Image (spheres, rainbow, N blue to C red):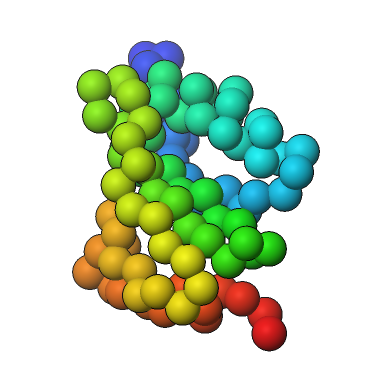
Length: 93
């Protein structure tokens, strides 16, 4: 098995990151660059404090915001577009 085949077998098809101050800087900086370099197609940022979700898609080697949700919005975004859910289901109230 070649190195590229090994590498592609463990790459995520999407990534979800929960925003906290220090990890958020890493998630939105170096980690996002790494995911883009390895062509991970979707990336979500979830911020439980702000009660938001931002979904990005990799297009032409650049991250493009494809959806932004808050509070109790219904979310139906790739890669889970076929399984909508209420965003407030993520908040532990």
